[in-house]
Image (tube, rainbow, N blue to C red; front, side):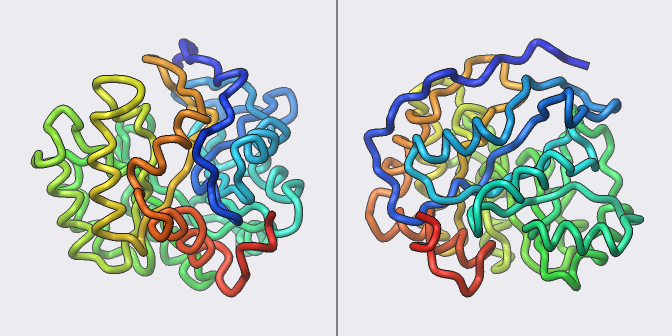
Amino acid sequence: MSEDHLEFHPAPKVPEFRPPVGAVDAHCHIFGPAAKFPFAPERKYTPVDAPKERLFALRDHLGFARNVIVQATCHGKDNAAMVDALLDAGPGRARGVAIVDMDVADAELEALHAAGVRGVRFNFLKRLVGNAPLERYARTAERIEALGWHVVVYFEAHELADLEPFLSKIPGVLVVDHMGRPDVAEGVGGPSFARVLAFMEGRPDAWIKVSCPERLTVAGPPYDDVVPFGRTLVERFPDRVLWGTDWPHPNMRSHMPDDGALVDVIPRIAPTAELQRKLLVDNPMRLYWPGETAEGGR
């Protein structure tokens, strides 16, 4: 396993952009602490401890009201750290996306739902999971459909053509992680991003996260090369986009982003107050807190 990770930024700046009231960081993680919540033996990387207290402090520092905490592969199917954070976030202030398998017990699914989990994540990145277990993913999707959960999918754009027949069989809402990881070097008009756009056009129940410029960039901060990709998605699919920090940025090797600087990218990809509110408040509230008002969280 790899342990050449970078530690998350110790003192992110206060962003110049002030998120609207009720804003949601819709993609972040909790790791450990390993002494209490051990990492999975089969993991492909070992992150630094990134406990719930640091996440909640960052939430408040950046001006957000809520978090969607996403289970990552280093904790495998043991969702205990994520659930612990959900239960301690404060009333209505966090939701979760779990990793479960097709043979998960009904009682465990019900407990996850009660804690605030509203989706499962399917990872297709070969460097993290090898060959994705498609049959098990399909059965898992069937298991969680009755709960009203959605499926989050993490792939690279060059794999999308091969994955589309499988993805087309998954019922309900799909959420695509990190802009579908297009090849930024191709430019916004390149073939890999064209595949992502076509997928979004062809599936009206697909959502997409305009997150992780730090992972996609070729040029580095301030991520000028990634901004056109995010802006295109926000302007073309304003009611189906989400944004998240990806804190604490696991498995990063090139550089560790300043989360305050990442927040300052938001007005560059969502240039109007209306688009900003949809991206940060209306859309995540509709997906993760349907029927609730945003103002209750801050």
